[in-house]
Length: 326
Image (cartoon, rainbow, N blue to C red; front, top):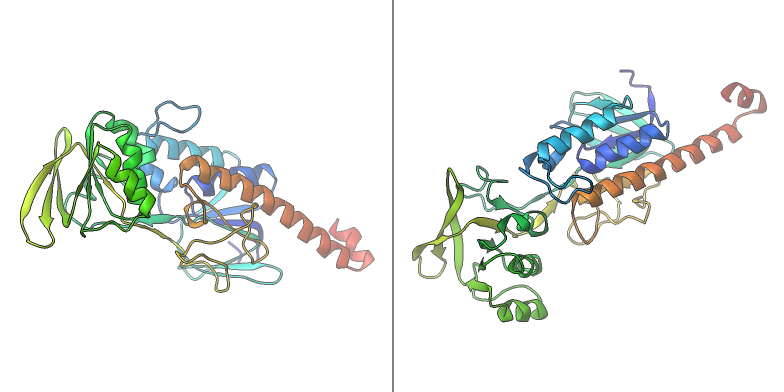
């Protein structure tokens, strides 16, 4: 791989947004590379089942991830399995530095590095993720219709998700480590008025237990008395925050107070030619279909950006060289 080679577009991240961007970029005839250190598909690979992807009533997360990847690579997308350590914006081209020492250059870059739900860091959480443990009520609540759920958290997201889950579940136990919720007053009122929601105050989950049939209980500890107890449940939903993977976002890029990148409707940042999509971008909901939509939007916008940039470069050449460049 030549270090002097300039791509039209480099996509950093191979989740649903990044792979969709790859599909649209290749269809737009952009010279494109997608860089992903892990398995293509991102967090889709961790879901046993996806039932809200249009056109597939039921599909495994890993299978859907494979379909995304195969579709993108069917156009000849250059996929590079490396870690990106820095994105350095430039006036004419942007530089992407890799952990192996290589540097790649591109007229446009799409950052699709996503984010990660905050973890409780307790036994059973990682082992049973996607098998009774979830971080998204909208994604997985359907699987717990008429069942018992333990939700963890006390902020707006935790209460909103608990209210949503209460529409589906038989009972929702909301576990909160303090004696008062942090959610807005209106959400608190709604939670208190919902007969299916019971709040377990001053409590933390210390372990998630499961057997061959899946999650069946959680161990609880009272934060004031130290008393231990067990709560039976069919699933555990954890809503204690979400952290955007923003370490590659260049300095000076506009972000909100929570670290999400602010973009325009084209998914472009305040740095020309740098786009941000998926869970890293400030938005209202985080779903596979929304990340895919971001990817399509950003790739089409990047194609227009690159075309405009190249046309401007040709116009600046002497007349004799313009004929040669065309």
